[in-house]
Image 1 (cartoon, rainbow, N blue to C red):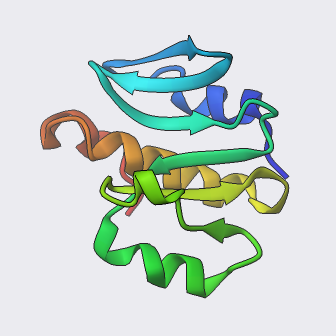
Image 2: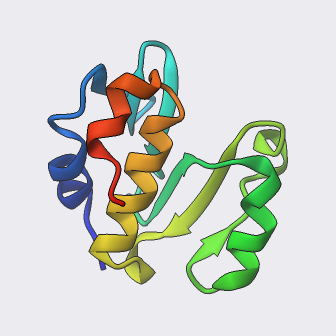
Image 3: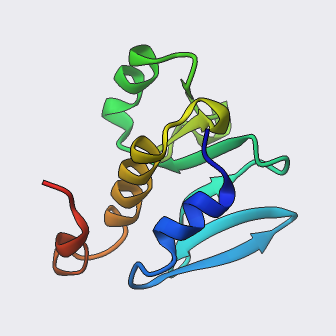
Length: 113
């Protein structure tokens, strides 16, 4: 299980990233683009994720991952239950979500190969 503080520890030093609170929800942005957001009760995390790979992600582990609500299906977005995520998996997902918002030369040093 991961916590909001675990996610903060991963995202704290990423270039161009900052935290905001919007209507009681913690979100992380690059510019005006939200790439990570938590539910109000912090039990779920939403993150940037390619639309074309989303169904595969959810099918691979439906206990952990879920499709976004219908109004968010048009965005590159997926969601997960915080209680089911492992730290390493969360780290990879949120760094990948961040990398979708910044130029390659910015994210390249942070990508695990």
